Length: 365
Image (tube, rainbow, N blue to C red):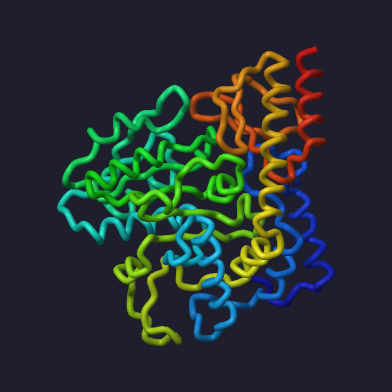
């Protein structure tokens, strides 16, 4: 640390040079995040100093968190769902498994997940001392529901399905998993970190939420397709009382018990997430999702015209191809199976898709 402080102009000149080293979203096709909606940025700035870790000091912000949970719960067909704003899918998944484990204390707990599950479940199992049992995928890169039952035993504390897989953008057969969960009396967590803000706005949404009676909890991230500022996730549970098992004493705060994983929690991104939902409403979100899905279809059509077949037809705006390399200047990613992966987020407009396809064509010329 400096002995004497840096002049503000010099400091921000330095910060600007660092910021300019970051990649702009313009040519990024691999990210599940996107520039925040202007309404989100405005709301975030209004709540910069708020801390939901001590909610009694910020009752207005805490009320916004309650409204966010109610809005997302309603979207997931359960207005009375319990929940709180997390830092994102990783925290939500860890907390869901903490609840599941506490509800079923066994000597050697295990969870059953699809081979497509997010790496946050590896972290969760390491932290919580859980054995992770992996179910293979079918030809459509979905969890093989027929193989699930054989993985569950008396020590299984949770079953996990994914709504909008990170790599292939498909929705696991959550309805079938719901039946299994009910039959075997197992906690079913749905990781909808990405798809939770996409599937409900599709013309023909695949069932994945609390409308299925076996679903116990859902993770959803407004900082992805919800276009909030980062970080903004949410964990929802069917029974609000389940969070009580996570409570710890917080004697010197304005609340005396807390269930959250983090202590200090930003209120700004919660306000931002709520602001976008209120500003756009269902109609606005349907329009955003429809545009992203249309761009995904156009991308798939164009890539296949150039001889790069899709790996699978996605349920959400994630496209994958048998294509070994991308044109210079574009950032794509690669799945563990070697497929090119592109996410058509709101910043990936039709013009961006067409420019990418033109560069693909030039690359092959």
